Amino acid sequence: MSVVASVRNLSKIYRKPGTNVEVHALRSLDLDINEGEYTAIMGASGSGKSTLMNILGCLDQPTIGSYILGEQDISSLPDDELSEIRSKRIGFIFQNFNLIQQLTVLENLEVPMFYMGIPPNERRRRATELAEKVGLAERLDHRPMQLSGGQQQRVCIARAMINDPLILLADEPTGALDSKTGQQILELFDELVTQGRTIILVTHDPSVAHRCDRIIYLHDGRVSKDVHNTQREVNVEGAQLAAGI
Ligand SMILES: Nc1ncnc2c1ncn2[C@@H]1O[C@H](COP(=O)(O)OP(=O)(O)OP(=O)(O)O)[C@@H](O)[C@H]1O
Ligand SMILES: [Mg+2]
Image (cartoon, helix red, strand yellow):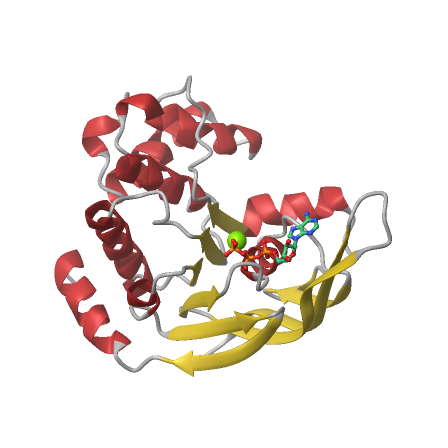
């Protein structure tokens, strides 16, 4: 199994503005994420989960330590290069969707492709294909306001896959959804994993974490437990059935 993301001795220290007060959000963390792995990150509020996701997602940089994504060491890249890596190699799914309200489902999916320099016809073709993949074929011309929370989250998932990312990162992807809708989003993740995607999600919900191959527990900025979940195989079979594989 090949490693897609590898961090070593990773620390993140935030400094409160205008003071000398430091917050050690991550402390000398080592972690390897394998290709195709479905990982949950758990831990108490303030344990560093979002900080880790933001670094893995190239939204932020570590204070100390290295991060190799794919083959590339990205720990000390300048901001503009980091954001280029983010737009090419990372898919980030936010809890609160971050969709553009004035645009339709298709247009929301086309915007990032516009910035990637993809021609209009190709943009439309790929946006339609992605929307269909996440079960939104009937909603292409709807605006976010006209969609349910679960449907909006599906748009985000489709958007996160536009660049065929090395990793899909989701910080509490079902946090804003009711349990039934959350369940459907998790089934979509199961399907994506069976198709070979590498997914890391943050959750407070043990039943969500137990759908994953691996559960990493953070405590006070350190990995306190890293567990491989053998139960997961059952879910893979279920998802394969659902996906008709
Ligand atoms: N921009 C920031 N500036 C200063 N401190 C920060 C900043 N972002 C996070 N922190 C601090 O870093 C620590 C880790 O925060 P983080 O957001 O990673 O926690 P979390 O595990 O995601 O928590 P939650 O479950 O509540 O989302 C916390 O003590 C937090 O207050
Ligand atoms: Mg958080």
